[in-house]
Image (cartoon, rainbow, N blue to C red; front, side, top):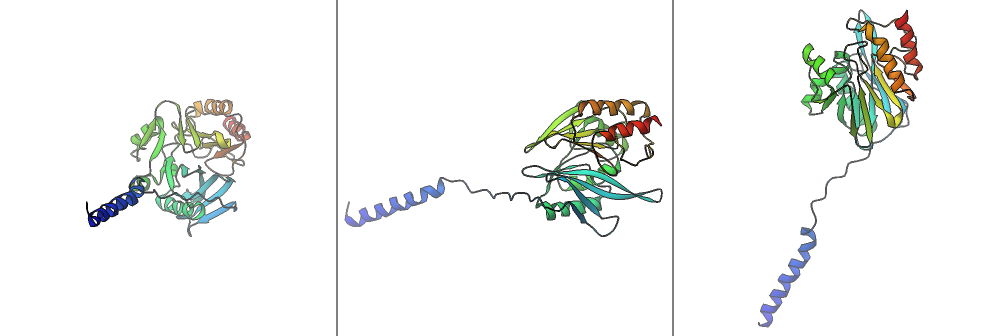
Length: 266
C-alpha cells in the first residue's frame, strides 16, 4: 500500500470512529416541563356566567373547579376537582358547558403550565358531563364506573371511553391513586364518589349536600329509599377523610355526611 492510499484509509477509519458516538445514541426526547403550583388560593377565567370558571385551592395539588348554571331563574354553582399529579392534570367532573370547559382548559394551562390528561365523571348528568364531547374531540380519555356509562348511554349522553367494572375500582395516574366507589342509589341512581387517599380528599358530588342547605335540592332522579344507606356506606369506608367536597357550595369534613343524613330525616 503506497503512502497516499494509506493516508486515505486512515482518514476513512477516523471518520467512521468519529460518527460512531452519534449513531449509538437515540434521538433525545423533549423533556416535559414540571407543573407549576401557584401561591394564590383563588383563580378565575372568563367574563360571563356562560364562560366563567373558578379554581379554589384545597392544597397545592387539589383544587375545586366551580362553574355556574341557571335553574328556575336562579344562578347555581357546581363543583368538580382539578388534581395535579407529579406530571399531569386529572379532572373529576366537567363544568356545566363546553364553553366553561374551554375556559377551565385555558386556566389550567395558565396557572399550572399543564394540560388535562384524563377525566373521571361521577354520574350521567349535563352538570358534570357538559364538556365530554369536547374531550372526545380532543382525544382526552374519559373514565367512569360501568353504572355511570350505562346511565349515560340510556340518556343519550356521550359514553365514557373507559369503563371500570363492578361497584369500585382504582385508577393510578402517575403517582396518584383515584378510587371510584358506587355506594348505592342516592341523589341519582348512578352517583359515584372519588377518593384520593394521597390527599385524604373525598369528592362526594351530588350525594353530599353543602352546609346551609335546607333541603336535598332538586331530586327528580333521587333514590330516596337508598340514599341513607349510601351515605352510611361512605361514612364507614372513608371515615379518615379530611376534606369532603359536595357538588355545590362549600366543602368541609366528614360532618357533611351527617349533615346530609339529617336533611334526609326531615
